[in-house]
View 1: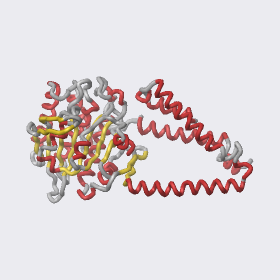
View 2 (view 1 turned 180 degrees about the vertical axis):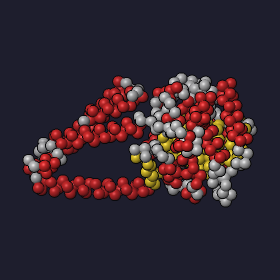
View 3 (view 1 turned 60 degrees about the horizontal axis):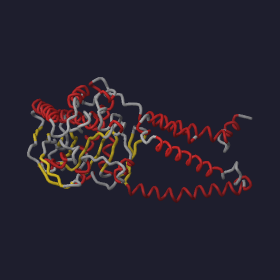
View 4 (view 1 turned 180 degrees about the horizontal axis):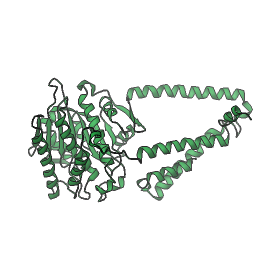
Length: 428
């Protein structure tokens, strides 16, 4: 057998070639999953490579904020609030010519419905930095809540987000943004998103038309683009060096499969367009005593949030206000290196074309094979075995997943790599 025939035999519709190619395909998928989800982003050690941010200072802020659980209306919460206020006042004093203004907001309050009638008197910490383009319309809101639940120190929910905002305040104080930016470091989110509701009663709430909300719904890992308001603002996240997101998470919120709430809902309901960026890995540690700085395993997660927030935030600032719309977005990242963004309308058009072209192509190919090898087509060695193989492998995978979920409902909260390896092996 010459080399050409040997090469051709590797792609025959036979047991060995099909098994080999299937195995290679699944190994490639597993490898990409491991690289994207398990290999952390390496934070730069040299300050010159930190994009103008200060990782060490942000790490110190995170440690100070998350020493103890600090739920709203508790003494530890007051301690954390005093620390944050001291930090932003220190930044303002250091950059007096930057147009930075700090508001210790103890007056904004509101009454609203959240399953019940809520009255809340806010004590948010607000920072405003005027933009250099006086003709630019609409500002950008950066938001994160600093309170935790009573059962967790809150390193991920929401310490890393608050520490990131503190560093962004200093960054924009040094580097005057094109448009005005407002920071809402709010309190009381864990109880009906109270801090965001209170912020809407402050005059600065009217300055912004787009927003970036930072959250934590897990422990460590990489922040995920949870939800977006429109195609226009979603494109801002393409500026992140390591974008991580999929529209499936937004669909899960719409279908109420994810019961957690974030301030994103409050701002979007008020008419703003924005991004909801949040941690989601290790969900079993969410709101538990294990949500600690030590549980992060280093600075990688913090840097991932800092990097994504800065770059997507700058893109929102540089965006013209008329670019923020565009209808619902469909988005997904490719290997954590780039973000694909399309409008929902364009996605429908592409799907309709594929639904028409796909069956026609497969039908034409099947007819060609049928007429050329009619006697072979319906045999166990012909194309007839493809649907059988698909049904059997799909059934085994689904059955195995249901069995695992019934035997151990929390198996997906353990080691992701082991779980996906088992699932792939049963398919193969």
